[in-house]
Image (cartoon, rainbow, N blue to C red; front, top):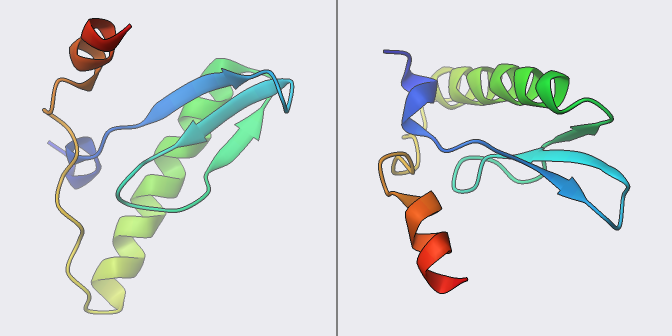
Length: 79
């Protein structure tokens, strides 16, 4: 398993920006955006990998993992 799999990646449509927006809460601020959902997810995965590499190169500990928290089902119970 890649270390990046420990972090939840989200791609969602933004009505404000009229495009898909990708983010990885807990690991990085900002993210990426574009017109194609699959391309945005692919780019987001690359950004997450690069961010993890930067943490390692700078000798900083990674933030706590965000995957495995069952966010999807938690959001469904709120809705």
